[in-house]
Length: 199
Image (tube, rainbow, N blue to C red):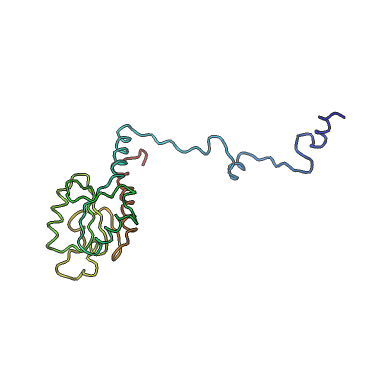
């Protein structure tokens, strides 16, 4: 008996070793088990225009280089300073340059209690910032007045003075919370002005 005939007799007529049952799968079974079926697993193609791509590239660059305005009013400013130090290292996300001039800043971080006397000065600084500009409300006092909500001199939320993009809760919020707020702002900046076709 030749070697080929010996291999055929040991493995059966279809090349499968004897004693092993072969289950034939149809196309629907393959889809359920996760096997590759050509044309069924490719992602949908999104068509866009050159203007939308340029807008996305511009937003991407803006979101990676947010320069905050150092505007600390109370104890939340200590947490804001701690977020910029080496332990938390805000510079990993391109936001380490705290500017002293509003004309060089993209983001106003309102950290602390805003009193009635400080309100007009906050609005003036916001108006001096170049467009596009964003505001992050850091802590309960800036968001809603905090523990001073029933006081006559406390502004009941900085959103009554300027439009706020991101709220970071806490009294005081940890530096990680501020970093999370800046990362959420990055996501928001990336999507500004983009219109996806079909939605």
